[in-house]
Amino acid sequence: MSNKELVRCGWCGNDAEYQAYHDQEWGKQVKDDKTLFEFLILESAQAGLSWITILRRRENYRKAFADFDVEKVAAMTEKDQERLLQDPGIIRNKLKIKTTISNAQIFMDIQKEFGSFYNYLYSFMPDKKPIINSYEDYRQAPATSPISDAIAKDLKKRGIRFFGTTICYAYMQAVGMVNDHMLSCSFR
Image (cartoon, rainbow, N blue to C red):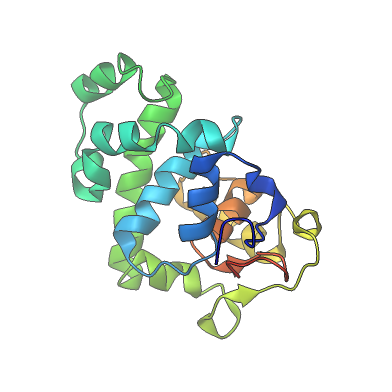
């Protein structure tokens, strides 16, 4: 299929990096906890910013946060936090950096409780399966859902920060818990 024949969800526009993310990742089910942790870091860093801002810094986040190794991130010290605050490749927000470390610790607690973070997430899903929506236009997709409300509320109760229901729904889309590709999208 040539690039001219491809139909994409309109949110990714003409930006090559956004298109690659849309085509190769967005809406595809993720089952491994390492990638689920990566998106937890990235989506929570995105709070208050645009997703493309974080996407363009993804490799910098990978380097800054130990290739998204949850155990290494959970063990980061105040010295690491100070180093990260000087890293121009990531969002240098002290609270977000500190929260990334505490979120890693909570992520590991959830893994212990449920066997995996994947098992935890899918305990909220009907029949423990992804939801495939059927929208004609990408703008029909909601910003939140009752499931994102429930997950965000539970994670907040557990201490996860920068992960409200809107961020949670974007996370669900990113890791394929919800497939909101338009019906006409070539990557549905």
